[in-house]
Length: 447
Image (tube, rainbow, N blue to C red; front, side, top):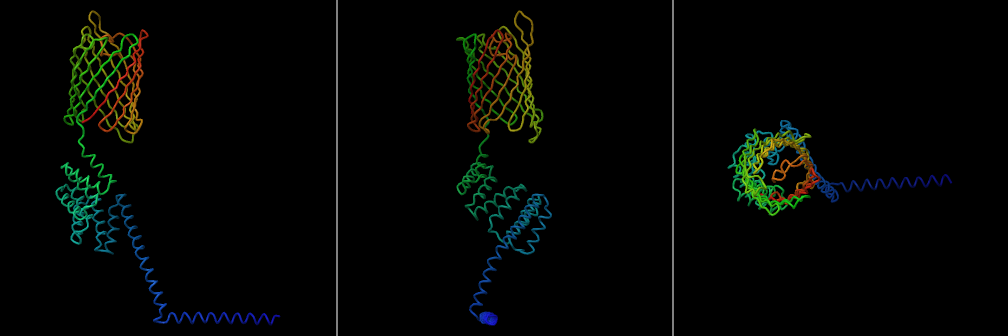
């Protein structure tokens, strides 16, 4: 039995050795010079090398560009330029690498050297629109606006369907509004999603100088018929430092109609604030003041964008009212605190000096508090307020006659940057168990 098994193992080993020798002989035959299989294997290996080499090159390219960007974000311009110089040493005539060198020089503020590098690149190849675009950016920062526009013209001629080139040329041509608008529109035709072109078109719209407001208000009195009023006002900003305001108001009380015209002028000085002077004249019918005069001083301080309080504004004013049988002087002070996310809080105090025919002089204090807040982005905002002791100096029978507490609020809908609709409502409790429910609405358009 053991002899038989030994014989079997010997035969298997001999066959294995023969197989190995056969494979070795076959490989030697295949690898013989001129063998077709050897040629096929060589070509396959070469193809694999060619396929892998570009991918490795691209990775290397992405690596050094990413490194340059990181260094530029840190402001390490010397190291960023050194990385690009190493790439230039490997590829001294590579336009893309040379463009990176000019780009980093421009970012670092070395505009003269950047301009020189861009000019050197154009001597090698003047057919790349990106080179002309980069040179135009350098010219712009050097305030060589005519040369910048010429460079952009060349870039657009080289690639007339690139939206970013048209948008860049429009920005350089902003002095000619019609031409700039045409360029932005071309950019949008090539790239409808271009945010730069859309914001550019928006920027070309002229800022509105005037605001027209139309309003109507009604006081529902518990002790008398409703008191109604309508008004229209026009505010015009003639220059950044000068503005005017005119308004016409009509009041109706128990069938009696009164009218008033109000006008004012405002002068602004960035460091000193704003000063407003104005007055009013009326066909009073013993309902409203015969005449008025007033002035306001307004000054604000900006604190910061990330601080809990973004800014503070203070307004002081004096207002004189002359009625048929009374004279009123009010001293007004209001502080406005601007909070993050478009919230605001204001406190106001008024001292009213009343003087009636045949009686002495009397001072009455009053105060208000108001909180403003956004509701829906920039399209809807609201406010709530409380006032104590506030008197209505619009009507003769509401002067020095009562003390009150007022609760109210308002909403403002902005249909666009040029139109809005405002609602105000309040409930006032007065002495002698009297009440006044107020409703007001106004529409504003800017042009």
